[in-house]
Length: 159
Image (cartoon, rainbow, N blue to C red; front, top):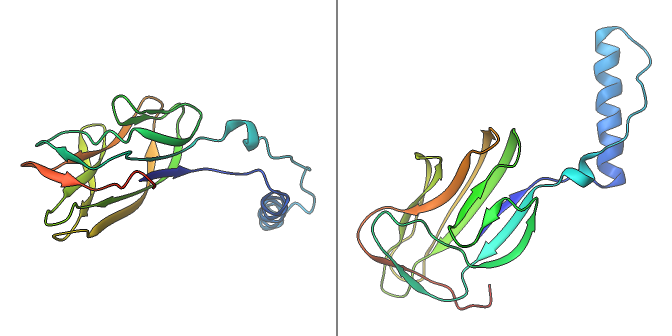
């Protein structure tokens, strides 16, 4: 499962943002901050995906998570398994893989063609997870790529 989360639509977050803005203005020597409203609600970029079934993944292949639960901002393409950043910003990206029974699964979370962090499972129904914050430019691509050999990634279709 891969998850990217960005949110700013609750009253609590708006209040915290306003408090932070007020503190920053006080530090800079101004006692009044202009009221602001959060316009992030319409700009949310988030996706959650999973596999619909167990599959063998070849050497160097991109994992194509075909079951899309959420795809706000339409950045994730289930046909390629690649998330393309629709705009510049900081993105919190999480990924979890699970090896099939009796198998290993070693992969990397990639930014464009560069390895960022690894997701390594032990043998047999073990999980590997990674969590990273990346600064992405519009058009940057993020995906999970299998390391080498042929290994099996697990899904029972319910997750």
